[in-house]
Length: 540
Image 1 (cartoon, one colour):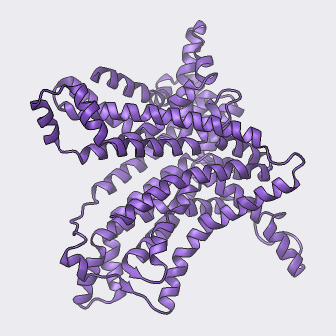
Image 2 (cartoon, rainbow, N blue to C red; image 1 turned 90 degrees about the vertical axis):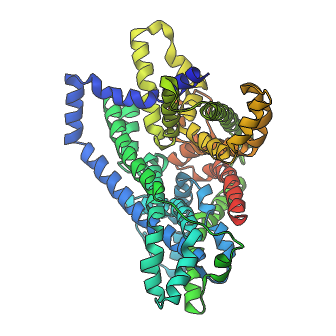
Image 3 (tube, helix red, strand yellow; image 1 turned 135 degrees about the horizontal axis):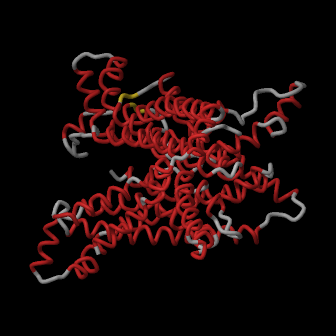
């Protein structure tokens, strides 16, 4: 079983190896393509990608860190509500946010039309939202919860107690924040920013819809428009290098998150209280927390509902409910299959890692490397995965045309499911490993002393204990697959459009009213893990 799992993990690493392998097949044509890209498009792709990432990084660090400090270190009206409400933008994919605000803020949108009618102004009242600054604002609004969540956890462990200790030593509020809270939260902020930047660089929906020249849009342009697989592979490998750097920063920052926690009922926890705010301070804290929730979730949902209502009222044939059911079923089918496969793989890998000693021989070391490989998949952008799958498929088709591998990969759901497993198996494995961390090894020893074999140990002992972790893993993978766009856009077979693809196609064709229904469905599904996460955090 260990050998089979190692082989499966190696198979999941094939797309990354396919992209990197393009550099080992450099010939005169590939070198000419690379030189041409350096002279033409590559500076633009790199410059705009780095500018976008730097701007989003600063924005999510400021907004996520400030809101986390507000609800953790201070007490003001509405604080308990904002503790969970600040997570709501996690349910809103960036491309859905882009569709909503484009319809609302564009020249012919509801807001500009109403303002021109009220003031008599002519022309556009502000620059087009479909721009690099507009994309930065949208990414900050939907990605700041990564920083908020990690920073709130870091400050919640010791922040209030250390702030109280600093107050007793005579430190003022500003000094306590700058010299106590900020150093304590710095590793969490760095980890959250790295996660947000990985999502930003992996995005395709916002970049394509706003006409940005980023690495992700360049990869698809090279592959689908220019039909140049070499250029696409070179761009994909550069994007992969940037993501690998961010992943290293995130892992290093996560490694510095070490806390000595206090039990909620201890005297230390009971004596320390958040700083109570009154007057203008309370109003400022309330506005700081209310604005990102309103702009990142409440207002976009209201805009989408309005778009849906107008479409149902004025469309010639009404809402396409029959087609919506078909799109929803395809999305549900793919998400359910991918979630089931990812959970089974994670359970098998987690079980074998537990019952074997990782350092025992070559097999144990290979299995540990396999688990590490699977855990890195979530950091790989969908565009890189798509190119990494199609490159080996093209090579096989070139050398063995009778194999008909392209028809199997792009003509059925197998290629999509493979891409989903490459990217989202890491989510399931992390959840299962977290569940195993709560199961003492002494239970396994007791079962073995009673004569239980490995399969009985898994079926009758581990499976019941890991049921909640497995369900959580399935739910997270299900939601991620429902929202996934880049890989689905390239690898989906004919007639297998998902809600994300349909929403993107409608928005690309400027049929924003028709994009509202699938977009709202994606947001509704994305709310499920956010609600569960909020409940788990309140129960801590």
